[in-house]
Structures are given as structure tokens and as C-alpha cells.
Length: 173
Image 1 (cartoon, rainbow, N blue to C red):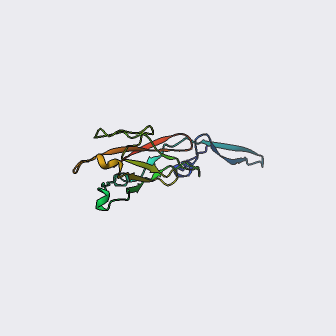
Image 2 (cartoon, rainbow, N blue to C red; image 1 turned 30 degrees about the horizontal axis):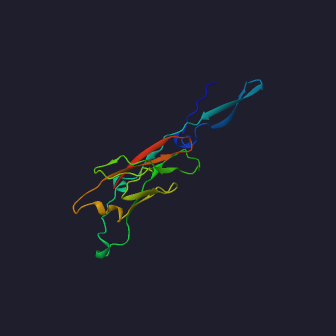
Image 3 (tube, helix red, strand yellow; image 1 turned 90 degrees about the horizontal axis):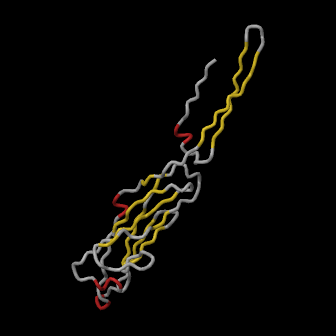
């Protein structure tokens, strides 16, 4: 006899790398004299790590802040902008996602960066579980900017899945 096993890709896509799904089917044969035999057919589908993909839009990875101005102008609170990145990781198997911010790629001004790789005029944070990011402008540190100056900072958000596969998205402020 002949048999065929057809894999449903949607059903096996969630098997994480290093794990397997095993299914057993029993095949029996009977002849006209009443004799029979049975054999188990064991199918093993090995999981592989599917690299996650960014599903958020380009607009979700952009933001603009403005310097508050001098304290005499009433600008005493830091300016913030936020967004949320999202990812599709079909084989995460309930493992906690891992968002982080890498060092900034650069700036179009000579403003310095501290030892943490954070621009001296503000801070970038991302929630490791939700992908919600917040950039906070430090008004006192941004006082060195003149009217009309534009500073662009690019931060790289990195998502690492439970098997170590990574995907990145640049956040531009």
C-alpha cells in the first residue's frame, strides 16, 4: 500500500525550533483469508525558528518633539513622543517578547552622546513586552539648539525571540 502525509503549514508554523510534533497512525492490512497485520506509521515534524517580522508601519516608528523654550516662556516640562512597534513571531510559544533599544545610529549635529549611547538632549525607552517606545526631550539639555535647528536621532529597536532570532526597526525622532 501507499500512503501520503500532507502537512498543514499553519498548524506546524508554531512549533518552536528544537521541538518536534509527533503523530502516529496505525495502518492495517487484511487479506481474503482473514489474515491481517498492523504497523504504526510515525511522522515527526521538527520545528525550526521562524524569524520574526515587524508588522508596525513606518509611521509607528517616527516622532517629533519641540523644545519647550526658556523657563520664562512657561516651558518647564519635558516634551515626550511615543509610538508602538509590533512584531509577528509565530513560533514564540508563549515566550516573553524581548524588545530593547540599541545605541543610536547617529545625529545630524555635533551633540554628544553619553556612555549609554543616549543622545544628550533626551532619552529613549522601550517596553520589552509591549513594544511601546517613549522619547523624552530634556529641555535643559536641548537649550544649546538655536531657533530653527533640527536634530534627528535614529534609535534601533531590536526584537529578539526566545531562540535568539532578531529583527530591527529604526525609530526616527
